[in-house]
Image 1 (cartoon, helix red, strand yellow):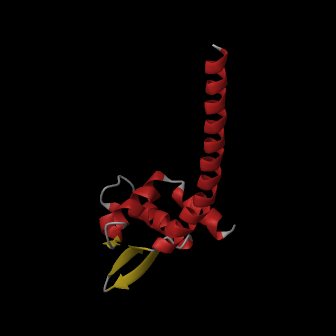
Image 2 (cartoon, rainbow, N blue to C red):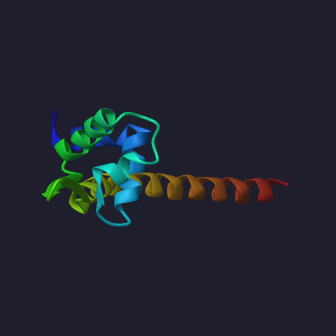
Length: 111
């Protein structure tokens, strides 16, 4: 799977998105990340592993604790990819708006 596909797979889960949201506030230990969830430590570790595989999170050891930190470059890759489609939709809506404006003018003239 390509890196963008791996990132989207990682982002597809609400627990992983919540972990990303928490890490956007700063680094956190695995225990801190697990605290708000009613799932096992092992399951949190699997979620973190998905995020690491997608290069969204990096995990380092500090003594006996593992600390996770957000890697914003992966999110930027998604942002760049979606930006191209946003441009497409913006242009499409601008064209549609122009057609509707022209139709309204024609309709007003006919009345």
